[in-house]
Amino acid sequence: MDVVTGEVGTPAATSPPGARRVTRLLRRWAPGTAGVVGIVAVWWLAAVTVLAGTTTPTPLGVARGFAADGLGFYVANVTVTLEEAVRGFLVGNGLALALASLVLLVPALERLVMQVAVISYCLPLVAITPILYIVIGPPPSGEPSGTAVVLAALSVFFTTVVGAVLGFRSADPAVLDVVTVLGGGRWQQLVRVRLVAALPGILGALQVAAPAALLGAILGEYIGGVDRGVGPALVNAGQSLNGERAWGIALVCALLAGAGYALFALVARAVTPWASGGPSAGGGAA
Image (cartoon, rainbow, N blue to C red; front, side):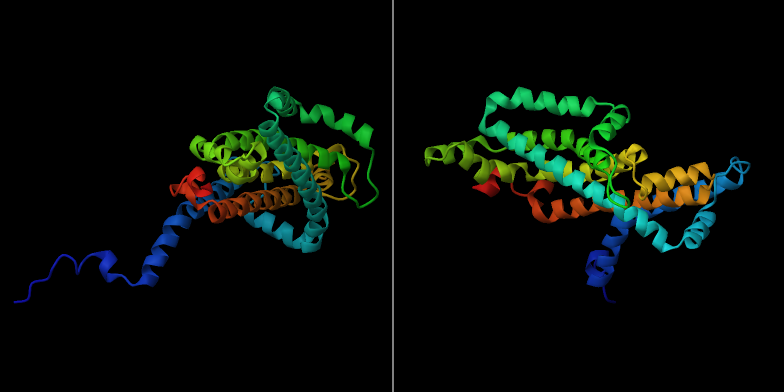
């Protein structure tokens, strides 16, 4: 009588590579997918029960409204808002990274830079939007709003400054000493060591900044004098009590914000593999 060993029944030993790949994908995507399905189910149930007497649409109603408005309606409005968000993202993060680098080169400026960052974070964006609109003025018809660009930049500035400064400081002191011994100054330390050490923190800040820039751009459009964009579309939908359109626009914005977050998450995973437990930033720089 043959004896069957325990190794034969081991899933890792018997399952083919394709099955193991499917298992890994299920473990990665199943929780998120289940969460989305659960949210949609609760939304649908609430729309037909406790919120039945309101203008809250069902997911099917939103889908029908999306089809009725057509893809062109969403593209025409979303592209304007995306352009504002991207401009603000680049300006705000570019300025934040420049100031964080300056702090490393001129440490005496650290308190000033951090105070500016904190002030930008504490500014009530809703209150300063009219002031920005008065200073910048309305854009030409169909063009992005300068007010929205500034608000998008303000929305990302603080997070990136803090993430970059903390990341620059996380460099291995031993590696910094090696650069100093070899005759390198603060600039060489910044470029050769601190920048590598700061990549996980910077990319993490950019992950958060991507949705924040979109939110800031939408907020700026409410008073930014634009005739196209997500902001005006939401205002028109609210004034006409078009719940399907309002929910459709909100869902599209949520998808765009999530896509921006996921994009930088993928970039971080590809560019900084050591951040998930591999070699340290300082060791990688060495």
